[in-house]
Length: 124
Image 1 (tube, helix red, strand yellow):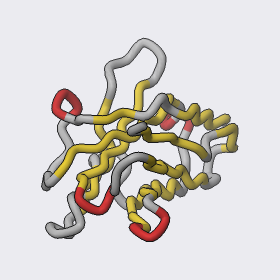
Image 2: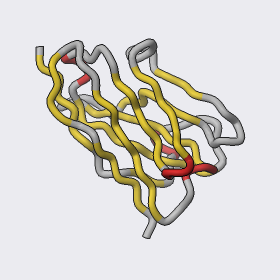
Image 3: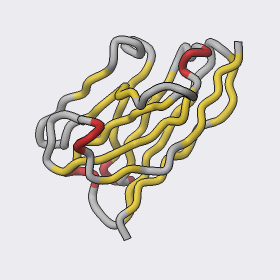
Image 4: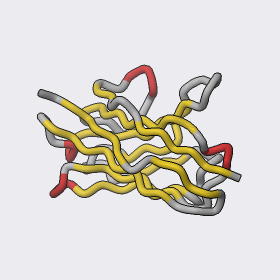
């Protein structure tokens, strides 16, 4: 069964850090672009970070998280991570990972697989 599972969310104070994990089963993430998206209550889903398929070797981040969030992958563990530092209350959202094969970029409406999300709550 093809599956993406996010973990690592939780409650953290402003200024704190969390590391989210996106673990794949049923397929190899090595050949997939993986994106992290978030959706805050009452808002549209927002793309925040993307790592391209390993053969392209690129990463992208939204302006709102540049310098604070870092995306990386561990192909041996078939997992992509999102290290989140200097968290702000406005980072509170459900965070989703999604994957698309052989892609340089991550487009919300064009991802093949989605996880169910993990909640991040940042208190002020």
